[in-house]
Image (cartoon, rainbow, N blue to C red; front, top):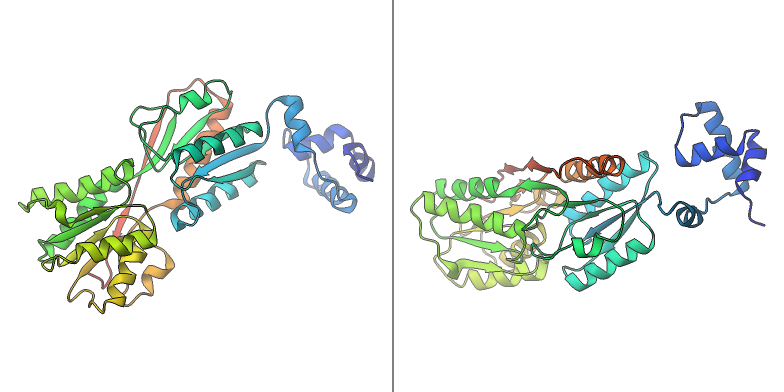
Length: 329
């Protein structure tokens, strides 16, 4: 037979209110009392009915995180940082994947709303959609991450990737490269706009014409990076590649290795996001390191403050990325 909060209180020798404070972290409880309550919960195999609590209070201790591709290391690391931060604050996380599809994103947001989440963190699939249409009837805050919208619709935390993309392109130029191909994700994303913008500005600053024949856009996937790399390198005069997403960097590297193209002697390459595999390729890959953990933590902190106070001005927080040079260029 399932036990209730009264059984836990009796077993721990405390009041029902004390058990509630331990569960909800609504008041400081001594460590000794907290341990007694937690032991009683474990011994009785007590499982709090958060759904019933949510229905009663019309809110929950659940936060929704909506990302476009959970298989992408970048979003996986962000999700880990958000979940760890929330756990310390007594919140739980529901993670939803949209596959870069706006209709699926709408469905996932509606799914989260059915759980009466206390707030959402969203990496949006597009710059142009009016998300307020989805949120206006619900009383919870939203923080957008990584990608900006054309018009501010909530707090946003993102990385300045335009400046570091310009720096990366200029580094390739400084090594003597003038025919530098660009591989980017979907052009409707603000991240793609920023990274391509940095690349184009670097070329212009050094008097190098922008040639769209050696620019390719596609889904931020391994296979897409592979195919775009194959296509762009049909232009035999290309001597360097700037790949602006981590998954596409994997695909581009795979094509170069399978085609026996020498790196950096025949093709120099700079990729995006600095994960363990980038240091063990042959040669190790030069990359742009984004502060993914900090991004997740800052978005969570801003959301928690917004839950407490809805009346402060919308804020944009911009983090910095760094170019890491290795032997690939």
